[in-house]
Image (cartoon, rainbow, N blue to C red; front, side, top):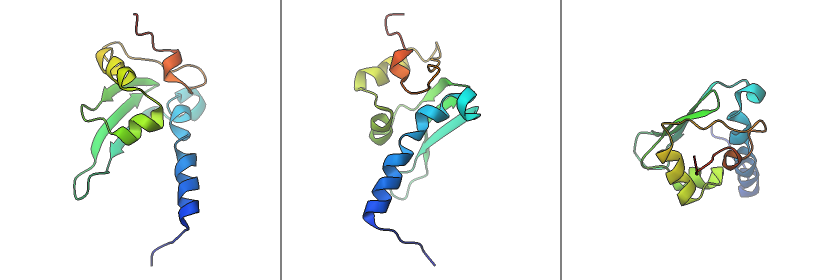
Amino acid sequence: MGHSASERTFRRIHASSLGNPPLAFNPEKSGIEIIRVYDNSQFESRPNLALEVRRGRFVRIADNFPIWLQGALGWSNRELEDYRKYLAHPVTLNDDGISVRRVFDSNS
């Protein structure tokens, strides 16, 4: 037997869940050391690993990074490319785990 909820409830849950990644990316606050985000938005396809974070550091960003995840993280196209470019120099999130842009220095 399935579960049902109103569209309003689904939208509220979805919006609320998008606030979780910044907290989850900070292992000191969340207790989470490894995060893997999979994209399962393609119909009848296997989920693809889109992003991996270990101890607050990005270790993998997929070439086919999903637009929905980019939007959820608030990354511009330039920021996404910068993260990919500097992946060899892992990015640590700030103490709040809220904005990766505050700790990423694209001039380094």
